[in-house]
Amino acid sequence: MRKRFVIVGAGVGGLATALRLAHRGHEVIVLEKTGEVGGRNRSQTVNQCEFDGGPSLMMMLDPFRKLFEDVGERMEDHLQISLCDPSYRVFFRDGSQIEGTPNIARMVDQITKLCGAHEAEKYPKLIGDLGELYRESIPNFVRTNYLKAREIVAPGQLWRVIKHGMLSNLYKKIEKRFDDPRLRMLFTFQTMYLGLSPFRAPFVYGTLTYMEYGEGIWYPQGGLPAISGAIAQLAMDRGAEIRLNCPVARISGKEAELESGEVITADAVISNADLPYTQRRLEKQPTPPKYRNSCSAFVLYLDYEGSLPKLLHHNVFFGRDYRDNLEALFGEPRMPDDPAFYACISKRSEPGRAPTGHENLFLLIPCPNLECPWTETAQESLKSQVFQRLADEVGFDPSRIRGMEMRTPEDWSRELNLHQGAAFGISADLFQSAFFRPKNRSLFDKNLYYVGASTAPGNGLPMVLISAELLEKRLIHDKVMTDGYVMPDFSENLPEEASWTRE
Ligand SMILES: Cc1cc2nc3c(=O)[nH]c(=O)nc-3n(C[C@H](O)[C@H](O)[C@H](O)COP(=O)(O)OP(=O)(O)OC[C@H]3O[C@@H](n4cnc5c(N)ncnc54)[C@H](O)[C@@H]3O)c2cc1C
Image 1 (spheres, helix red, strand yellow):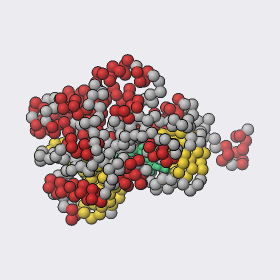
Image 2: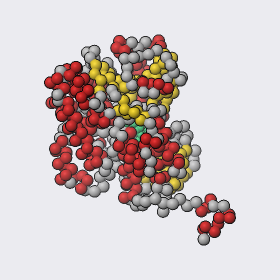
Image 3: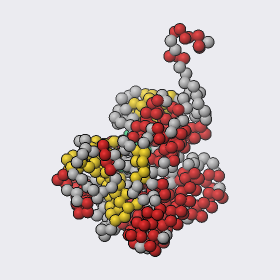
Image 4: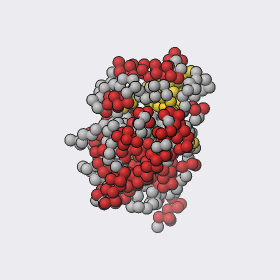
């Protein structure tokens, strides 16, 4: 009854799967290429400043809570979270600003100040509608493995799609509701979290806008990597073994071969490494499927001496031309001119993350993936445009930088094996979402499974946690394991004098 699972990759998807399977009593071995757990969600240090290496917005708490509850724990006993309110400050190119908040009354007030009551009065209805969309789409279209026909073509499903106009264009739907272009940006840019343009996204992704404005943005003490750490610790407490610095070279459903040549056998192998990379490099499929990729991210981690009081914990800067900016990333890829970007100072929520008199400034500039070659010139141009904008609007002075690290599309590809440096995995466009998203089992090997951002249901920490939920259900459905707990067999470890227990 007790099975042995090998998981390739200790990203949040691999760790959550390890925890779920180890909790059921199975033998779990996680093989991670790098020297740390967390994958994209790990920490970065520059001098005395600590940063979230990738994700910095904790949203949609339900999948986080569910993971802990499913293994008999309470999230609050492992993560100390607090609401960021205001969620963020937004800087528009015309010099105007707004602070997003999950408090509806205050948000109405903010919109009134930005562009008048006639726009603000439409806001509560938007949030109500998006809330309904969210509550219907997550259980019916996201938390499903699409293994039965009724999950795909049932009249109830079709009715939901039609009722909410889920497949209509997100930007166009928001454009119809609001006249002010700044509000259109404000309520659509969230698809960028999936590395997807709102001009190319279906309306169902309005659920992301709801997550932000309906439920708010949360922060765990220690930063988002604390989530990876908490899950890894619990998985190990349940008996999972996590081996770091163990790059895997080849997998099948029955074994994983490390680059060192060691072969580890298993009842099933699960790859948490990026799906296109897994299929090409680990499974070595002769004709791997071609996917459309998300954009990438140029990330800068700065130890800044001085203070930047105009910046909150989270800040969004829009460029001059929203549409052109997005076309540069998702159309014919090119480096954006006057790029939109995100700035984060987590010290605002946790002062200990940077020394007194310093700011831990994290900058994320969305950029094309490696389909558009990354060059030194592109890098310098993006960096200097962003530094100039910060100097003009928040008093940033580059001469006060005391240390800097960066991650380019090439780094995402080299360090974490993200195909084409696409930082958000394969794109979440209409034909790579929901039913069309790659399933969590290999088509070529019935014992080989996938978990993580490029498989179902999608990218982002909450989706990756749901991906581990779906995989657990799939393993039960496929009878790889039963829906119950198995007692570990400790008999071989029993001391001689206790041998009677084996009779
Ligand atoms: C810059 C950035 C900002 C983001 N912001 C947010 C945010 O604010 N909120 C949010 O919810 N999400 C955000 N995301 C998305 C989120 O980080 C990802 O969806 C999530 O972390 C992906 O987890 P994963 O387990 O699927 O994959 P990964 O984190 O990529 O983990 C895969 C693991 O597999 C390992 N691996 C790869 N190949 C091998 C091999 N051959 N052998 C052994 N191990 C291997 C890798 O080293 C890695 O540790 C962001 C992502 C990025 C890049």
